[in-house]
Image (cartoon, rainbow, N blue to C red; front, top):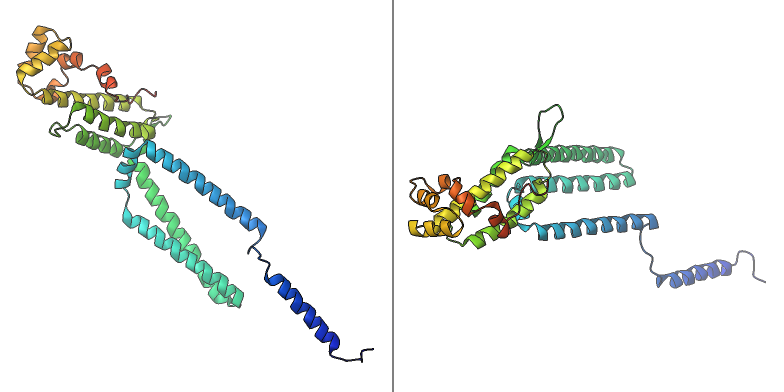
Length: 278
């Protein structure tokens, strides 16, 4: 029999706990609760889906993404990132202080986190207000309609002017290819506006730019006359356009060039119609 108060039972219990510890040393446990891992995996799935859509859309509308990227404000991005980092730090400090029992420090960091959250919210509201002002706006009719913001129209014309500049020194085929790439991206974003008259106006203006560029490329009067005749323009009308004292922009709106360079011609070059989706 083991004497009462003998250290042997205690030693045996200690040995059993040590053996159990040795058995569990080789077993790896995933930190955190299962529901937390479900949440993390769901977030990763959502992020992957969004990123996949982003890559596909960027590939399809590279010109539009590059144009939009040029209008991003780096200072705003840096500011928002710093706000998020500091707010994350204050949350971590709040949790640490709560575990240590420091109520005042925990409350201070909690208030700081709420403050930074409010600052971030205000920053995003101002940022999106600017983006909306430069993208879509709404008419003041009794039933408001979605329209293209004036600043977006200005940016469109600036870009088209760059692509159709008469002194670029590129062929009309290359000019049309670059313009078509830009227009497809632009239509993907603005094509569903509810003011079709704006799209028609921009489409007519773009075609006039192209006619003006082509007229400039034909250069000499003899070449211009021959091109007009070859494209079905009558002799008198072709002679009148060729001998006109007006410049390319004015003549781009003339009957002769409307006959020689119809809308179907630009469609054959792959230039999409801004109103085709309506």
